[in-house]
Image (cartoon, rainbow, N blue to C red; front, side, top):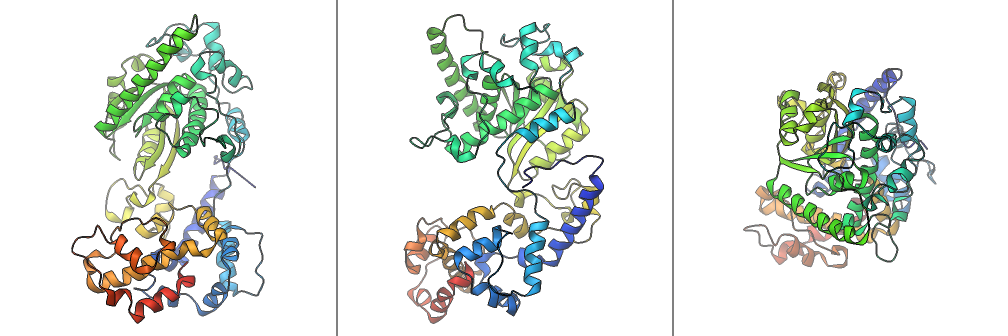
Amino acid sequence: MVQSIGITKDNVDTWKLFLKDSVKFVDMYRSLLDTYVLDFFTEDLWNHIKPGWREALIGLTPSQLADFLCDNSQSPEKVWPLSLQALRISAFTYTLPRKSVTTDASFKAYLKKHKIQQDLSSEYSSCTTNFKQGSFCSKASNSDTTRQNVVNDNYETNLSKNYPLQETAVVSWEEAFSELSPKTGQHKLLQHVFRRHLKPKKQHEVARLAYIAGNVARCACSSTMVDVGSGQGHLSRFLAYGHDVRVLCLEAQGEFVRGAKKFDNQLKETVEKMHRKYENLPPLPPPPRHTHCHLEPNMDPEVFREVVTSAWPELESCGFEHGLLGLHTCGDLGPTLLRIFANSPACHGVVSVGCCYMKLTVNDTGIAYPGYPMSKFVQSLKGNHLSYEAREVACHAIEMYSQRLHLGADNLKVHCYRAALEDIIVKHWPEHRHAGLRSVNHAHKMDFAEYAEAAVSRLKNVSLNKEDLNSEKTKENLSRWMQVR
């Protein structure tokens, strides 16, 4: 199973064909994408499906439905309509790799194949950090030079000798679940100072992305990264102190900047205790720097340069060599990073994990710099539009839904509950159609009336009556929960 893909000048035409066919496929089944499950009853979605499809799908057990969605190796036990089989096969064909990455081998191979290695004789090699806080552009010593050679098998060993905080900076690349301690649920290879304030999921993300960004920074970006949308600085802190990378944090919300500085100070207090415990420790690597900034989709690269260098002037004297970093680049922020990368000669790499695709602006709204599609090629394709509903579907992991199906369909009753409640809301309060309702824990263990009252408790001027909650229409809707799942 392929776990990663690479696009080069040699295969770009192949990927253009892939995109062309993908857009055509999406356009063919737009009616399935442009819907919400909560509209199941209000828009009679079940009867929008072909009769043959309904007959095939309604007979599936929850586990069979999970396999239908996620396991291309499974064959149906009975003959399905050819159109349904074609949909399934096409969906697998035009899906990018979704298997978890269990090794960093392909990443390292990519760096070696494209010779993305720092030329230590180049001008900017003298601008690498020599472990003296705030020191720039001093001639690197032999030991410093060793630290910069990342694309080799000794990187982990070299880094661990530099500073106690870096002893576990490089996380072994295994299955995600094996990274967490069975006893505490915390990341086994992150020191407490880096786990603080982070849930296990975020610990995993920070550890993995810092490893990738650290390699990219050292290989191609003069050991300098600009973390955009840095939040409270958890990733930047680990990248700076754990991987010895200079990091500038750009964050649009002032309260997050203040929080990041607070957590930086907490780490410094921990280091002071460490200095009392260990003798002859080198100075702490330069801390991340934080500045308040909001990036616009059409931001001029020179304006961006001015923002960064005004916060860290020494970077200018090093040629402004840097990379861009973003964890959870929400909506248009991801495309904005790509534009800056493409238009800024000094930016040599970008590491971005996007989220909230429904917040992407689209090109049919008349804006000059849409978040989707960025590519002029995709813009030229007929049927490239993605609705808000389709973009929101893209935010959900089908593996999570499949896992819930394997656990049993009962815990998916909430989908039917929500659709039945929407039917009542639209009937009496159409202005609240698609309103965000209160999340109700363990809803499948409640009766519908109890769930409904809790879900609408924060909606103004909405008071459910028993007649609606117990009407024949509502009972009929609830009896169809196996269709909704």
